[in-house]
Image (cartoon, rainbow, N blue to C red; front, side):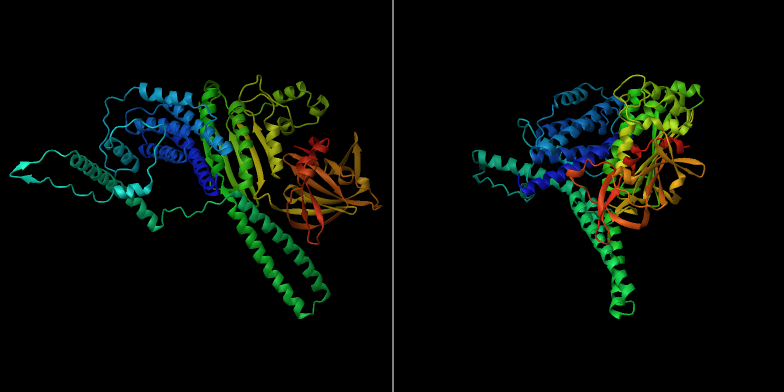
Length: 637
């Protein structure tokens, strides 16, 4: 496959993915509003476009599924069938099949590894055996003829032929030739008023002329239908002013900006040193002004590139209308999905990692949180529950909340399950408050489900959620009230490439702590640090704070004899602990660099960066380090 064909294929897959995301939402809306003709026409056009593109690229299985789906949709839009949940289920199965076919094409370049016979038969049976709607007549068409209908008219005008296995795409030049004026038929000469013998060639030419005239008429009506859209594009008001750019190119630009930021930091440090030594030198003052301008431009460029990588969180939320519909039907519950803040923008890398954790949380809310209609009515609630997804920007963080009005978390049940699985002891539970006990659901292997199902119960959900959120330098918090529902709050940085960090020192080593997880830093004496059951702790404002010595974690020899040190208080969700360091240096903007595959398994380290003085500094993974601290529950509440 040459580069041009690869580019065409990538465009096809990208556009197809966007269409499929939109179709999931459109079908859920159509089920709620079956008489929405505009929505049905939009769905039909999307399926038709997908079929045409697949036919051009030669993906016969995809064409067959899309063609059958298009035929069923055409019966719906012509009023020959009712929009029923049964029909929607079948078409959604077809959409799922198209997704699998696209994945096959993306992985192998072909669509032959997915068995589509079952869904094709289902669609065919639905088309043939569905009851015809009676008593309603299709309203007369007042809108222009669309290109899809023109295609159908062309098929009826052309002579009958065996149906091909896939769509035949006519090249554009052939269409232009057919639209020219047909040649005039040769006149039949007459002699003495008597007509000559019939000429088969002349009859064939006359038939061809008639056919070309009809084709030209259909093409003319199609062009008239396209004029309003062309006019809108020419005006620029509704034209999509965007350019599709591959993510890897944006990542490359982001890496270059990161290197520029590191160079800027280095120059700024050198410039400050020169200003301190030669403050009266006019050249040094001029250098200081130039560096200030460079700093401003670099910051603006960094912000512009970061905004280029931002995408609306709507792209993440798009999958949930379909998900909620399918899961609620499977559970036999009435669930309403509410989406808020869909225009909030997040970094593309954050959006890619956010989908799976949100799916876990929404499914858990529906399975464990929301009650069935009869139980809700017995508790004085509406039979229909809701799951609400809200996104907003607060400072330099993106905040996402998943709320429901279900039964809430059952503290006693969580206690019982945690004890049964040996995750905690009676002594541990005695020191925990209600919120601490609720956070036990994030422990690996924890589950309150009484039996394993395809929705939940395997104990691999919530700990995976916390791990994925922590990997993005984010935090997750849980709040619940019995009988009223639950709320899970996720906080994520705007970008994961460039972050603010607190530089700390332990002996001769320097570390960077992401500032998003830092609560405060306090200066203490070593006598204030106590040990309880082998765990170093600090009594900070009447709260017992567990401590982690970086010198012990990274096996750094301690040579300092000073009696004072600093404790940096860290918050990871509801958990709090302190990091003991020798000195605090400064707050600095750092670029996260991967350690590569060779050092990928090093625990407690998220990456590395280069400081203004040219040193390589490790960036600590606080969500990983908290696992090394015992007794973090003693500070929660």
